[in-house]
Length: 305
Image (cartoon, rainbow, N blue to C red; front, top):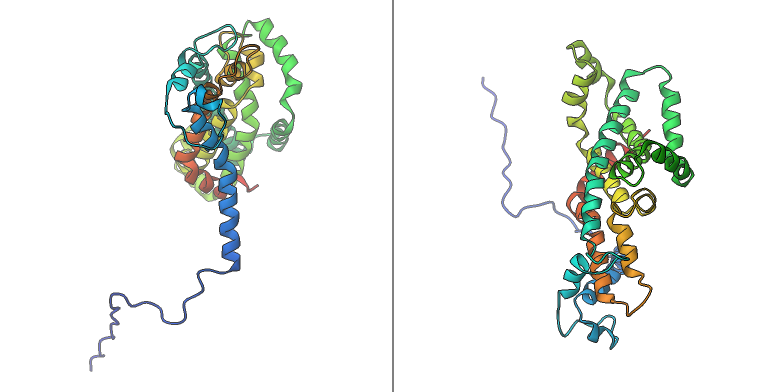
């Protein structure tokens, strides 16, 4: 005797769960929306003022109307800020500072993240001798104010001939970025099952082969977090560029300070706003492009340990 076939329930289009729908709008939700709107206005209002001021001619800025839209739109302040505004005695705009910042940023971010990931991997899986002591020393370095290291670094760079060079700035950013980056990757790798590493070892994996072929491909969320942190910190740095860069290698932030603080003449607010927006553009673009992965990486391991 054959068993009857099981009944198949078909769901019609448009059919859903029955019952009373939950309230979509309540006091709590209204409060959340109000908080989000106020927070957005708090951060967007200065950006709005900067943008509209940067495209107004000076004749219109002198009339006041801080929040009013421009009657005549001009991009001449942007061109002047980029190529002909005076930053001190140099009247080539902030473009030399932009390229100096790029030359500092790219090797600093790559070297600090690579060495930090490698160190975090070694401290998590290979259990080298005095690993905990080394990690404690790195952790201490992450919280020491870097101002205490400036004078010793000035003496070291002067003695080695690195002072006032791009190499001094790159080396400084790599050194000061390593503790935090190592801490991030060490905590991230601590959440990966140790059995995965043991299986790779059984298959004949060595230190670098396991790192490049197994650990690094699994570290994309944390790599994004590290890139955002390092790009933001290095691009916005002022004191290191002012101290170690010399006149020829000063980054964009140092040149912006010289531009917006003239010692004589009328202050060109539209040029200053345009230069400020261009200086902040790189970290903003990085945040907008990779913000979703940043949150995912932070949730994946940055707060563990």
